[in-house]
Image 1 (tube, helix red, strand yellow):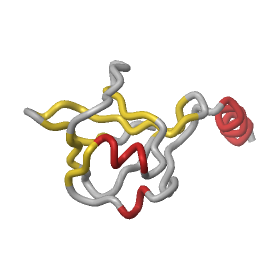
Image 2 (cartoon, helix red, strand yellow):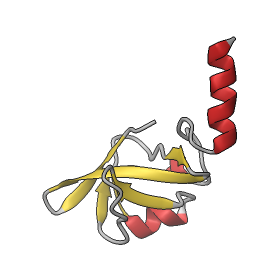
Image 3 (tube, one colour):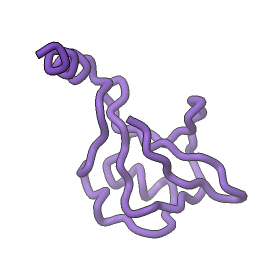
Image 4 (cartoon, rainbow, N blue to C red):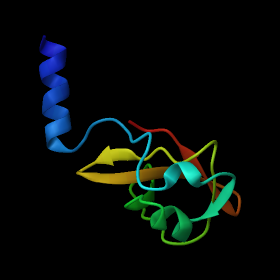
Length: 90
């Protein structure tokens, strides 16, 4: 019961879990531009330390699974040479 209440509180605060489907994110595969990811329904692309990524390429493991952070769909990435790789957070 306590865990269920905690889950309700996190969901209500806009800081819980991740999206399995958000907009057209499931249609993205392989390496995509940040612009294509944002156009698919992701609100923001950022690194784990909070740096916003506005351009470049992101190599996706499967399809983007953005986290629900402060009411937004945020895809977290990490640098890998000249591109970024998506990471699962949340």
